[in-house]
Image (cartoon, rainbow, N blue to C red; front, side, top):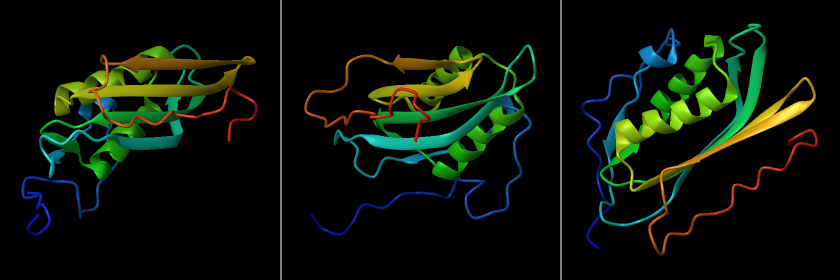
Length: 157
């Protein structure tokens, strides 16, 4: 292998600049960069242990530990834009299921990955934790997909 793969970041608008919190998930810009290893199946994991949204009925905050795994095809999500996108849910009212699946579907639209899954491990309100899982299909053969290993609720940590 001669040299290391390069990534074109010329079209990015958020990386390396001060960026405010988007008004909503719909207004958040998700940016992508070319996969430096196209044709190679590997798993990328993002963990957001302090995800926050609002209950759409009461306006009370809801908290979750999100684990996003994907096998990229042509694109990688730019991590700063993902952080800002996830942060945009802080003032967004939606049920746990709606948030979790919306995040997965938005990433699928933006990245067209070979495979994606998300685990939304929601902390309890009213004494009941809700865990929401979404997967785009079967993972490609031969890719190591580690277990998410977020513990069932016992003060999740």
